[in-house]
Each structure stands twice: as structure tokens, then as C-alpha cells.
Length: 403
Ligand SMILES: *Cc1c(COP(=O)(O)O)cnc(C)c1O
Image 1: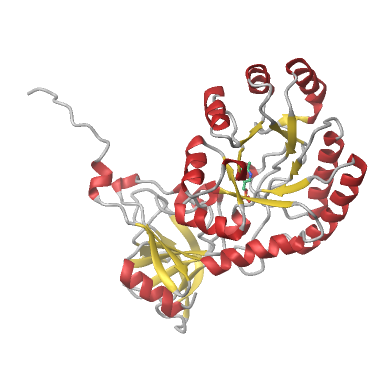
Image 2: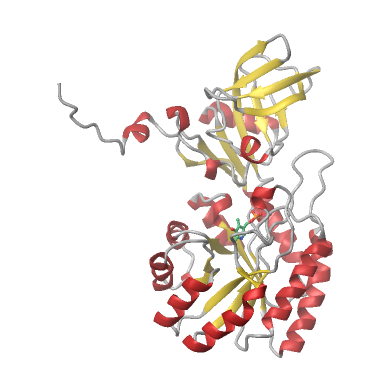
């Protein structure tokens, strides 16, 4: 998307606003499918939690994608977007048996990640095919908050519990049709991923009726200049080869599944904010924008570095700024970064704002959550209205406190 286009969107839809480029989403989808073109049956299930707007889900449907969901609400969103239940996998963690049964009733593929629920579900619904989430105990992932495969992680059924797992399956006579792992976000090292995959292959041999193996996600995308990204092409080539060899050994053509979120939508999104105040202090120059961690929490939550550019003055002299928000609490987006000279009223563009940005937004400070716009077929489409004061007050109940 050109700066000119983005400036026009900021003008037409006002700031702050999230903008997503459908071409970029399509290109990332294509890149991933091309990397695995040697695998006969490939299934990509887009991880809804990264960006869950219904128009984005519909876009994924047109691309041929399935969905990976982690709550019953995401399942319902997916069905509402037109996906059939078979195109949806439900991969929650720590949810109640009731929620899993609700999803099963809707006909989506269930993925269970603990022995307690597996035993209860298998006893009550032995005929419903279930996928199991394995924890291969491989350390992968950038930030400790998003590394989910390690030994202390709450995710998945430990590979050391396979004997117990097999006893439950034997006792309940339930049908396991898939195995799954998701070792965490930000996979840098392809060898680590392949190592974890070998553990999954070994585990798979315990099950006779598999239809698919799901390798989760965690592909890294570059956030700032010089960042490394997962080499999808190399991973595709190496894993495809291993997968095809495994299918031969297993004696059946299995489906290779992935469930990427960030890889598919992160770079397709930008977040546009307006500079309210340029504030010179004794130590730095702050550019204060009309947003805060209520709208984009990743820098404060994960220490993520979103590149920020001044699209109102992209040729201006570069100066050092700290970009902060308007929340009454420290909400730093970036400290001491070079940006083209900023004037009050300028539009700053935050890159990589497609994944885990809007979906983590809140009403903190009683602010409205921003609008979302999809740039599709060279046109800007509003896909979510900015909230209004009504949304803030809607579910609140004023009680009579007496005199
Ligand atoms: C969050 C999540 C994903 C997506 O991870 P990305 O790093 O965004 O690709 C995939 N699978 C499961 C089970 C998840 O919880």
C-alpha cells in the first residue's frame, strides 16, 4: 500500500485505524503452499486468534484455507464466515469439557491437549475422531511468553506420557485421527523444527488410523530491518521430503497440516495513528500519538519492535524520537528511534500490525477500539466501525445506591 493511499484512508476513516492489504495476505498464503508443493495433501488452517475479523476469515475462505480456532466463539465466527465444520480445527488449551463437547456437536475437528479431558471425552463420545496435541519438549520461540513446547509449558500432552495416553485410548476405544504439535511462536532454526517433527513422526507410529499430522506454526516474520525470518522455502523442501518418506513408512498418504497466524497476516497490516503532541523533555523528544497499549499492546507485552515511519513527511530530515501513547500509564511504542521529522498532526504508520494487534485491543482508559479497513481490489473497505460511547456504556448497569 502506498503512503498516499494510507494517508487518504487515515483522512477518510480517521485515526487510529488498522489497515490490512488482502494482496499481501494472499501472497503469504501462496508462498507457504508453494513451499510445500511436493506434499500431495496439504492443509493450511489459518489461526483465527491472530486477526479474527469476519471479512478476513472470508478472505481466507476464498484462498482455500481452513481455520484453527482456540475458543467456541472463534468456532462460531468461522461457521458464520461460511466455513464448513470439517474445515475448522478446535485447538484450545485448558477449556472445559462442556466447551469441547459444544464444538464437537458443531462438527469441527477436536484437538485435545490433556489426559484428563481426553479420558472424559473418549468415554462419552468414543465415535468422535479426535486429534491429540503432543508436547515434544523442544525449546523453540523468541520470547519466553510465546515458547510453548518446553518442559514447563502448560501446552500439550508430554511425550513421556505416551504409555498413559495409549491406555486411555485402548480403554475408551476412541479414534485418534490426527496428531499435532505447536512448539511456539518465532521459530528461527529450521533444524530445531525438524527435530521436533521427528519426535512427532515417532509418536505417530503408535496410532493406526491417522488422517493428518499437524505441525502447528511459529514461523517468524521480520519486524525491523535486519531481522531474520523463517526460511519457509528451505523448511518446505526439507520437511516435505521427510513427510513423504514417513507416509511411505506409515503406509498411507496423510495430510500435512499447518496453522499459521502471524506468517499470514502480520506484514499485511499497518496501524495508523496521528501525532497529538511533540514534547521536548530534558532527556528526549516524545511523539505522542492518539493511541496507546490499549490498541497495540505487543511492544509493552512482548517487547516487540514494530517499525514506525512518518508517512506525512517521509522525505524529512531524520531525528530521534520516543513514540508513546496517550494512556495514563507508561505506554512506550519505541524508544529513541530515527524517524523523519515529526510535526503535530502527522500520521505515523506502525508496520507488522496485522497479527495480535487489533485482537488484543481493549477499552482501557475507556477509549474506543479502532476501526479496521481492508484494502481489497484497490479499494478501501471498512470492515469494523470504530466504537462509540454507546459501546463503552452498553453492558454496564447503573444501580440505585440510595440517597
Ligand atoms: C497461536 C497459535 C497458532 C498461531 O501461531 P503463529 O505464531 O501466529 O503462527 C497456531 N496454533 C496454535 C494452537 C496456536 O495457539
